[in-house]
Length: 231
Image 1 (cartoon, rainbow, N blue to C red):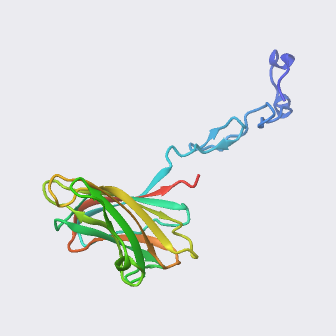
Image 2: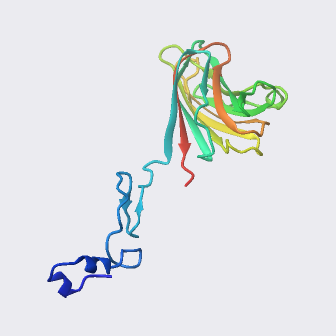
Image 3: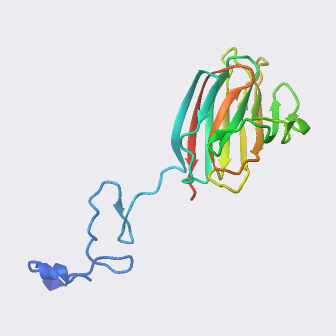
């Protein structure tokens, strides 16, 4: 629908407006009635919609360690996202050379039984490749997942890590995580990289992840949980 030249040269009546079709994706016409909000815009197909997210990552929660025995990231896991990432920044242990571990919250509780398995590899500028895996890391032995073998805490040392969790809301799949990041070990003036994968045999929904030191507290570090857009 459109106005004729005669209509444009004369006053437009209510009847003229009423007889003109509302625009659609394939038909020109009047602008559709707006939804009276500040969150949507008029698209080229003549519909109102919210703009697409500017980022594939949505920040869900932030936890800051401060001489913490454990750091729990467990308030915002759900079925909203198929995948999540915990970005760990500037982690410093209270004990020089301490290891960083985690446990998974499955079925509403943090699992402390020997139902974990893992594989972790690391390389530093001072050594050849070191791989920590084998019978000692199989199901039936571990009560957690070792993420980093050695973190320095002196001379401004720190380490960073990204831990990814897929399908946390599933109630039929075992819970898998994988991680990677740069590490400054206790050895002076060296830098390394760590990566690995871990599992718990539980199949209930995963709703949290707990970080802790093998020997002592976590002096400092920021733990941010992001949801990864499904599409």
